[in-house]
Image 1 (cartoon, rainbow, N blue to C red):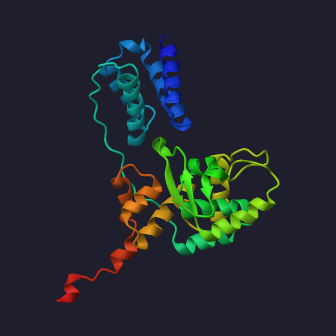
Image 2: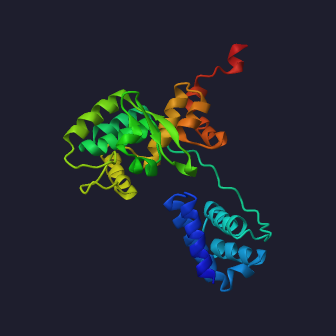
Image 3: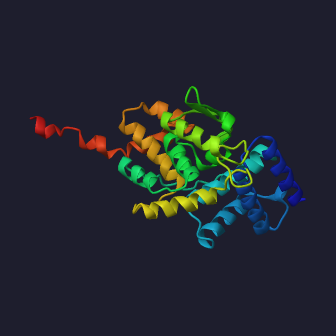
Length: 276
């Protein structure tokens, strides 16, 4: 009975348009919960959930971010799907907001200069110049971009929201040349030898190789390029509301983390004592 409910829940998430990553994550945690409680999921109470979260924290050593994600999955299953009036009265510590790692313009230039593969170079430039998430990059299709207006559309981004991105004029010209020479026919902006979309792992791996080659001593991922895009705009006095829209953040508070990175502006502020 429990497994049947979980399968129905998975199907509903699919129909509602949740990303495959979210569906997979929710199902992993709900299956773990099902295995842990060893009883019908319709008979669950608040104590069962507390015990499961405690087990994850003490035995599996999971952090606050994961615990919050597990609790979100359980709440969605009971409250939204089963319409169960179960009282889930659990407060978890909020995920610590770490200041993101960003690359300086000089480091970005260094990184791009060592990339000897045209496709990979265009990928790195695309993520940095648009601020797209890695999942959005690999799913981007050529017809999502308007090369004449130097804009693009992210279709069903995080939270199933569409948004507009801006394209670099230089990147557009370089991509057109690349596309005219690409021997593989594919609808995807970037593809593998079979014309299929690239994997996240492929981009993460080559990015680390190029970062090492460029002698950049920072932990770099595709998301680092997204962070660098946002910080660069902020340092060039772009309104934070515009940055929020370009990044696809639902909440302005998420975007404001970049104000903590923008220390260059802070250094230019005149100290009040010096004005006396």
